[in-house]
Image (cartoon, rainbow, N blue to C red; front, side, top):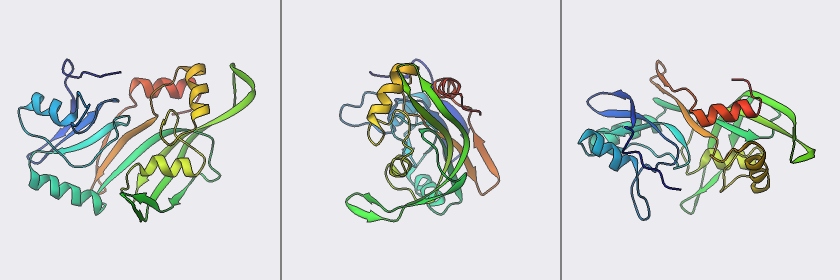
Length: 228
């Protein structure tokens, strides 16, 4: 399934002399490469007439807030602001299962580029739907959770890996998720897209950018009876 965004302009949430913060749609890669037909760096360059410098990455299947820079100096500056926690990124995920605690942190090292590195993710449970009976399998009851996640470190696929390790995998995560449950949920509720959203960006603890849930995410919350 290929996506073509040239007909619809990418939504710019904030812009100044150094950066553009955009709302990246599901299915659009951040950078071009082999077998990548559309990407933020090419589409936004066409839209603005300027070269794009991504400050951080989002997976193709993750939608939401993405920071891009207008030059390499600004890209370095904002990368450092994120790594020093002066810019805080928060994600929302819809997951299978439920956690014992309403808030806490995952502190499990991850292999990143062949090296084991410290990885910390803070979490807060926003909503839980329990004992949901599936029509396709009436003997099976499932629980679902809407979770807010804040990155303390930035390892590749950190949120996806940490949630999977804690037996609360993201719905429709085809790499780290529960393949059997993904198949069930696709058949029962027609949920096909990975339920991970880059939702909130806070700069210097005061300036906050927050986006609403995209339509596919909102529909999934409603189908799974999760309060939000």
